[in-house]
Image 1 (cartoon, rainbow, N blue to C red):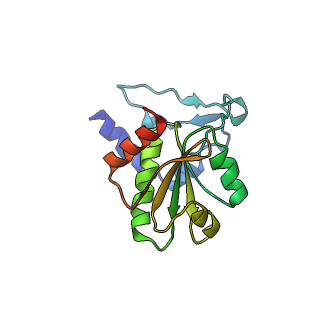
Image 2 (spheres, one colour):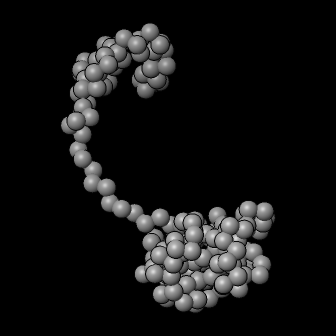
Length: 171
């Protein structure tokens, strides 16, 4: 019952009351009308000022998937990769590609960084498609150490994608 009263009072807080709140980030005054007998609230609550906020170290995180920009980018991020890489050859106009893409990303994300995924648009990178013998889309090629390990053409369901990835990773 008391929590309903608190919620009603919070909703009743008008724009005028919000404008009257202090602009300082270090403290906020809570009107006494918000206190309840069940849970007394101090009249002033202290929050950390931005300068006092604990610093969080940024650790670089490898993206689950990335779009290949050019041949140099493909060489650097796919062929020279330490991880196995799934290369998804797709096209914007391809309906099955639009279905397979999110499924692949989901399956790769489940692997928690043990495999990467490169997306290659065949209309933008025709030379890569020809080099890897892509004659239909979607085509997915698995590469490890710059070598083609396995491939498939067409749509696969989630279980088939998981088993394909497990085989590539070597589980």
